[in-house]
Length: 114
Ligand SMILES: [Zn+2]
Image (cartoon, rainbow, N blue to C red; front, side):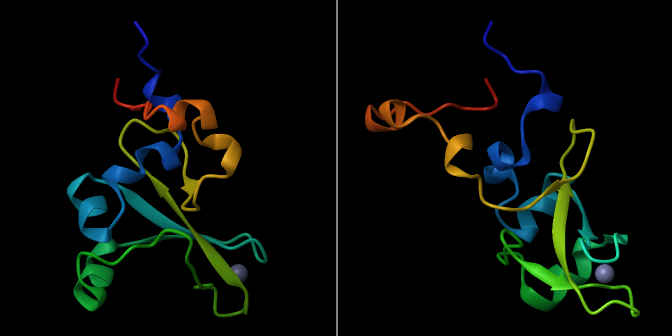
């Protein structure tokens, strides 16, 4: 009762499992760049990012230079967690994705694992 189909839990609700690149690797997330200008998507390894920036670095709400050399656009970073069927952009949830204010005011937190 009350459990959600895992493939319907949005990335933003899984954020506590992937707040940092170290957590993302530990929880087997995969990432890719998604460029809205040239539409090129490139798989990215977490290991070099962890090497350069450390395991506490966060990719949420960041963009990167498009890996397509012919494009000068900024690519979004998208991720997929185990149980998901498509990549989703790593952007902070919009207000309408958050629990309603009356729930937050009462300290009731919706746990996506339940
Ligand atoms: Zn591009």
